[in-house]
Image 1 (tube, one colour):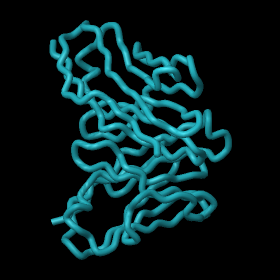
Image 2: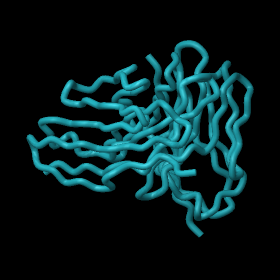
Image 3: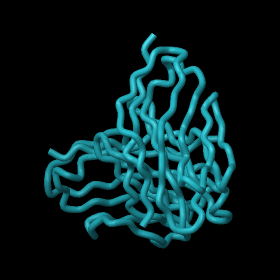
Length: 115
Length: 112
């Protein structure tokens, strides 16, 4: 059973460019969340997708947007990249149901470097 | 809002030493509590969890007990190994939708 997968592994962009990161959830999971982890920090919640809709959002600007497809996979888009967007971007999948017992499972992340 | 406070590292221990990493939290309602581990160059792995007061989560020799009265979820291991060297994150989920709030992480280095 494949876990959460993310692509690409690494990415280098320049300021002002746009980037798209991809995530496939664990089998049986229908909910995808995205997190940003800056160097030396804990992950920060960006947003969560369920039934192809953004269900919850953290404190991130509109430059960060996403999408969920009918097969539950998801994309994270970041426009007008800033140096401060350099981070490890983590995708997590889970099942919507019993939130008290279900758990988010994380992918290996995409390392984004903005020059 | 929700928050997690954990001891700052790095923590350096000799192999077979006893480990404690402190974690306290602030949350609305009744959160679920987690410890995640991040090995160098990798993503996060769930280490253990507890979903209600007095529950004890355990895995790979690590344990943590959900203490509602002290709002704590300290991580312990009786005898650490070099392979336990990693960054450990305390985290909580509360208020529905499984959004997870993380602490800053504690780096553990175990030396032979």
